[in-house]
Length: 243
Image 1 (tube, helix red, strand yellow):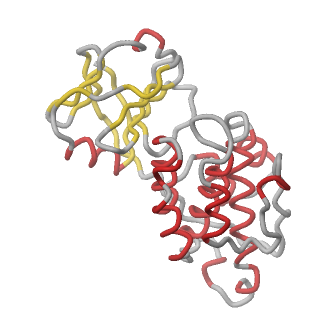
Image 2 (cartoon, rainbow, N blue to C red):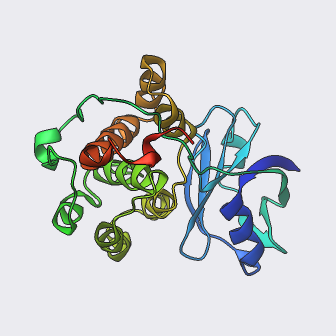
């Protein structure tokens, strides 16, 4: 048995999933990702980033699970016949944005290539240029969008046009990245991003930038863009006060 903690929607999706085998999308020492009916479900090791679409285990190394068949049975994930048991349920939604009079401008490797707007106001045209842009399981352009979408969601200011454009383009990126964008739309974030939104200290910046090769930098740039996009509303907007 593999004990895990599960984000709320991960548990719900597993409970609703039909019994049967699931194709493995990626397997490494830190994470195993499978296709759960068009949604990417992960199992991550203790030292891995706790993405909001994964089951969080205390296992130090998932290498022994690589290559083993994955099934869902009665709402339980099994890997090589070993059940993954949910012992704790967590809520990955960020709830707080620290009040501030100013924020650092967005900074990102390849900023000029991604053509990010200085005022932070993304449009459907920006989404076209960002979705799927860059290598890896979570392309850099998607990370920027995830940071922007999640921050706007936490502020209670989702953008319907940008959100619809992102949803329309889920098929243009990896399944993991599309799933994380779906999470971001709901304000579900990595713990490092949630910590930075709540208290943007140098330590929080360092922790976020340490996520992946460029994922943390993309999320941070996207979050800063989102904050810039609502700058003119700050003086009277109660959402800028800590929740």
